[in-house]
Structures are given as structure tokens and as C-alpha cells.
Length: 229
Image (cartoon, rainbow, N blue to C red; front, side):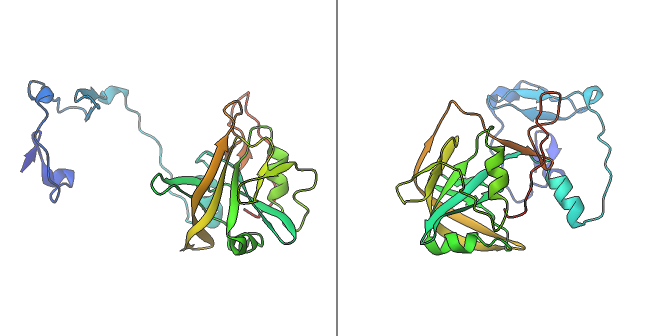
């Protein structure tokens, strides 16, 4: 079988059902000297071979240091996972937060197995994900440390579950544990959102390459401290 003049085997599509060619493409010829891609409206977007550059690739040893450095190039935000148990408010900084599902409403995050705070939060069952704002570096640093009074001087209000919503957070989600999975030296937590809120006037705290902010003249390059995440 041939797809747009290209054998399916060369495209790795042998077992896929291929829809008919869109009529908008029938009258268009596809050049063969450079790659072509389809736009959402069916038109062809082409990238000329003379504008493509070859990115140097250097294979590195698969070590924890290289993993951390390489994967740290994925830019993310920062959160504080908070709850309240019989001793008072507790929480920890978490970088590995992501949206997971709209129906049901789920998010995910990955606490380290060495975390001493997550087992306590898991025992409570309810917690709040606080998405930190750009002016909350100190809070991020404080909640990344173990053994300290992380809520000292931190203002907060209770979510519907009673978990702390940190003042100044750009967004928050009140959650319950939905499922947990093995994630190597981390635990993969899927959580169901029960309530949420946001402040659109704020900007997020960005984490890139082990530092806050993006590189460049205007970037903040403060290094994050602490290990509990």
C-alpha cells in the first residue's frame, strides 16, 4: 500500500488504517527533495532542506549526574504540596507536577522515596497543590529542606479539605489521593481535584537547569537549595 506516493513500510505504518487523501491535497504535488508536513487545514507546510541545520549530538554516559543535567533542561514550574495533620501544617516543594486528566479531573506529581513529608501527607489523604508565583523563591527553598519549620512566617488559609493554600500562590488545587505507582526512586502519585482556584494577575516561578528563571540578561539565576522534593 502507498500513502501519498510513499510506501507504508518506509513510514512504519503497516498496521495502521490510513484515511483517504484529503481533497484539498489532491491537486497539490508534494516535492520529494525536502520533508513536507500537513497543517491543520489540510494545506502543506514545507521545510526547505537549505534552512535545516544539523544539531551536533554528543552521546554521554548514562549517569545520575548526566540525567539530572540533561533532563533539567526541560523547563517547569514549581509547587508546594501541603496538608494538615495532627501536628499542624506540613508540606514539601515539588517540581514534577503535571496535569493528567480532565475527566476525571486528575493531576500527577512524583515525590522522592526519601521524602519524609509525603508519607505523612499520604496518611492524611487530602492535600493542596500550590503553584508558586515568581516572587516565591524563598518559599520554594524553605519547603525543599527537611527538618525545618517550613511554615514559619508563611501565611495561608484552609482549602475546603483543610489543607493549606499558601498566600500569593498563582493557583491551587485541593486534592485527594487517587492512585500511586512505582516510579523507581520516586513515587508516581495520581490525585483527584476536588476544588481549585487561581490568580491570573500573577506570574509563575520558573525552574530551568537547576536554577530559577530562564537564561539571558533578564533571567534570574538563583540556585535552588535543599533536596526534599
